[in-house]
Length: 154
Image (cartoon, rainbow, N blue to C red):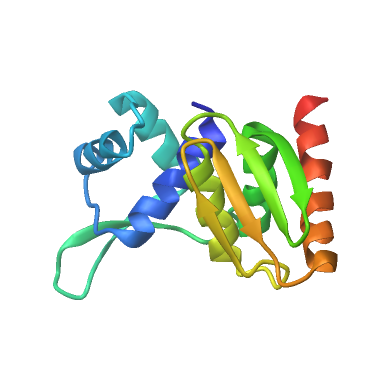
């Protein structure tokens, strides 16, 4: 699995769950079908600038230090270039084909961005349906996918 996709999933998991140890993170990743060694998780934590902070009940949990980390849009562009294999515009929707097991991660990134051109997404194993409110918004998203898909292939 590509590092960018794994790290996007780690960010999603630590944002949605109270994870406080590398072992807990490895277990949650395994439940998502992502196998990673302790050394890889440790490296990801360092690269992503993940820190520990107390939650409201005193338990320690991971969170991402938001200093100079990549923007959410930069993460989406990286995920597109690393995982998207094909995109097809169909009326007000884009059918986005990805590498196996990467559709949910990219879909979550798109959902988190709350792009005005996207009404919602539906993700499967290796396909995302990106739904827009009209043909113009769908075309904007199609152009974006194709731009970063080409970058990933060059």
